[in-house]
Structure formats: C-alpha cells, structure tokens
Image (tube, rainbow, N blue to C red; front, side):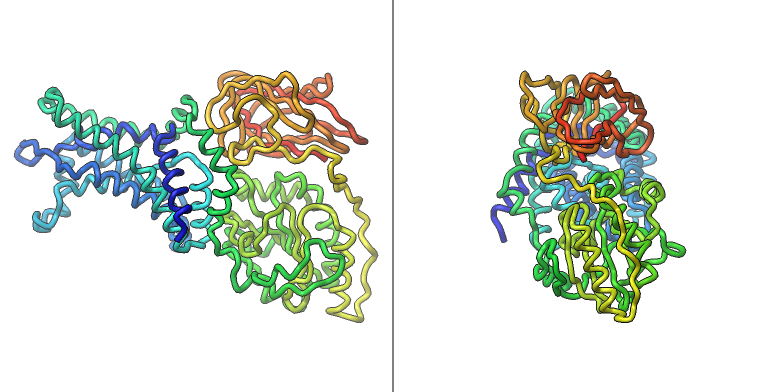
Length: 574
C-alpha cells in the first residue's frame, strides 16, 4: 500500500473541500449540523438532535459519493438505467427532507414505514445519514488529477485496492472541511439563544434551503454560482496535475493484463511485420455505428480476415488528417478481406454524444463500423495513449503492427497488402491507394494547443493558468508557438469561456497548411489573421472550425475576439 497514494488522495480531497465547488451544499451542511435538525414529535414537542448528527451527515455524503464515483456508472449500465438516475434520486430525497422540515406532518408521513420497527433499534438521527447520502448523490466536486484518476478507474471497471484506498483518502480529505462547517452549525444552534428559541423558524429556513438547492440542481444553477467566484484552489490543482510524482502514483495499474501483456513485443512504427500476441477484446463499447441494427462486432468472429483497429476522435485534427488514408484502405481492400474498425475514444465530454459522432461520421465519409468507447475501456485494454493510433491484426487474430500518431501510411498499407496476401496467396490485389500524405514535418508546425485547465499546452501569457474566473492580459513579448489571453475568462477542465462580454486570445503560430480552432456554443468569433478580418459563425455542439488556409509554410499572428457564450477548447496546426 503506497503512503504516497494516501497522502495524494488526502491532499486532493482537502483542496476540493475548500474549493468554490462545495459552496452550493455548504448552507445545507451548516444548517443540517444542528441549526435546522431538531425533530418535531407528533405531539408538537421539539426534540434536540444528537451530537453525532454532523458526523452522520458527512459520513453519508462521503460514503454515497465514493460508491457512486467508483461503481455507480457500472451498476446503472448493468441494470439498464440512465446514467443520471442517481442524481435525480438525490434531488428527490433532498426535496422530501426539505418539505418534511417545513411541514412536520409530512415528516411523520415519511416516517410511517419505520413505525413498526422497535424505536430502540432506530436512531432518531437516521435522516441525518440519509440527508448526507442524498447530498453525496448530487455532490459534484471540481475536477482535478485525483478525481480524474478515480473516475477513469470507475468508468473502466479497473477498481483495485489502490483505487479504493485513493477514493477513501479523497473522500476523507474532502469531508474534513465539510465536517468543520457541520460542527459550526451545531455550535451555533447550541450557543446562540436566538436559535434555541426559534427552532420552528430555523427548521423552515433549513427546509427552504434544501428545496432551493434541489431546484437549483434541476436548472444547473450551482454551476453559475461557481463561475461567479474565482477558483482560489486552481493553482494547487494545477501543481498536482503537473507533478511527475503525482502522475506516477495515480497510474493505478491494471493497464497490463493477460490480453495485452505481449503488445510490448511490437516496435512502434516498425517497417516489418512483428508478432505481438492475440489482439485484446473490444470492451465497454456504448454503441456501434455503421453496423446492421447497431449489432456489436466480436474480433473472434473475424478470424480469416485482416483487421485494422483505428483509434480516433472527431475533433482531433491529427485524426482528421489520417482518416482519408483509413477510408481509402477500407474502400480499396474491403473486398480483398480487410475489415476496418474505428474506435471512437472521446477526448472531450461533447465527443461522447452519439448524435455528434454520427454527424462526424457522415461528414468524414466513414462507411466502416465505428465503436463508441465512451468509458475508454477498449482504449485501456489496448494500453493506448495516442490519437490517432492503428493496430494491424492478421487473419489468425494476432497483432502484427502498431503505429501511433500520424504518418507511416505507406508502410501500413504495404503491411496490409502483405497480410492479405498471406491469408490468401492466390489473391489479386488492387492498385495502391493514392491519398497524399499531409503529415506535417516534425517541428514545422505549432504543437496542438489546449486551453483546458487540466491539459493546458503552449500557454505563453502572464501569471498562472488554472481553473476558475481570471482576468488575463497579454505579455509584452509573447514567445513563438504559444497562446495568450486578455480580458475576463472562465477556465475549466474542458476549455475557456469569456466572462461577461467579449475577450481575446492571441496565437503566435507556425503552420504549413491550415490553422483550426475547436469551438462550441453560439455566437460569432472575429479572427484577425495577420491583419485580415475573418468571421467564424459558431453554432451548436463543439466542432473544428477553419481559421486559416495556407499553401506553404508560414509564421504569423492570429487574434480571436470571442463573445460570451462561445467556448474555446483547442487549436490545431497543419
């Protein structure tokens, strides 16, 4: 058991417990600790809550949050329920408890099912734990490296002892500040005479607060509150995210298994066929596209065919440049025995929406089967780390070639032809495909640039770049191949959005063919490209938009004026 892992979990939890993300639940926790937790008996007598109530509330929150984060998604998928059913259950429970605080008769009605149980076996504070459990179902802490590691482990089902320990440490760390607030609520209720005299009024205030939280959750108002308050913990989260020691500790294992242990026998981008073990299974697929009636594909049923597994995601410019080669191979060699399978492994949350992927498939001219790997289960089973990435499998189901990233198309096609010929020596192959290789020469373009707080790349502005509301200004001298912001922005773990009016982002770029921006929301973005004005109409789900088209290598400057309501996710350079 790693002490480092426990300490990282505790630190990540403590940072989360004092972050703006817990503000929506703080009033409920404060009041439930004692100020609004007195109980009205059926004869109208007010009964004081137990001194253990704050601990029960926080214990319920920590336990339900941990269980839901680790195995909630897997359990719901197993029984076929929507992924948001637990959140709605929490909102309903909060509403019922709130009404019970306002209307004692309703509380008695809710307690009727327990009336047949001998009261000595039922704690009068049972609704304290229940309230905490309901809060745990709706509690959405700020994303960070620790929570990300827990979420990925839970969504992929790779939950080992280290993951459980990390989750428990994170929950304990988060609970400490929350418990302090709950105990403060109890202290106020016990020490201030006005609270002791007005228990009925305080109960009503507590009930109204819980109902307000429930209504706010329905309309996602807590997110608005969090945007209004700067994330004063963003710098700490960023430091954790960038720490090599933290990254190493959060690699929780489970990546190497009996199915993928031999993939190391392949040399990335080798020019000759190798033997790297039986191809791992395609696991955890949420939907199949371009198959009859959405029918799943099992690799075991494809023995006798040469299979190309292509990992991609639709907003990735590198994938967009590689896909013409993949679609060309599919068209040229399908009748000769090649089966191409695209594994859509989302990088952004919006890439998990099936309708977005379906539109991208249509726009990109993809006719072969595509598996939506929203939980990154197949991605993990192949120990993959790149977009795009291709795994070439022979007719016996053995991985024979791995290529990560763009390029190497001539080698991959030659190896496809060799495997097809090995499977059927009498086969007459079609002519080689003739898709131009648009892979940029290494170092000839600005690297892909991300505005996410958790994956910021190429930031060249002044000061720290972290999550929350921040006021930025351009540096006096901005380095080549970087971006900088000016104005008021809200940065989160997806991208950056102007706060209030418009704000600007400046790119010092190097490109040979094009510059593209991944944008989402609704509004017009004004791009000033080396002094020339370009308007970009953004509407709907995030997508990749062309900012500049080139016919040769160029260095220059682009400034985007972005209106509130439009989110900037990343820039890609070809």
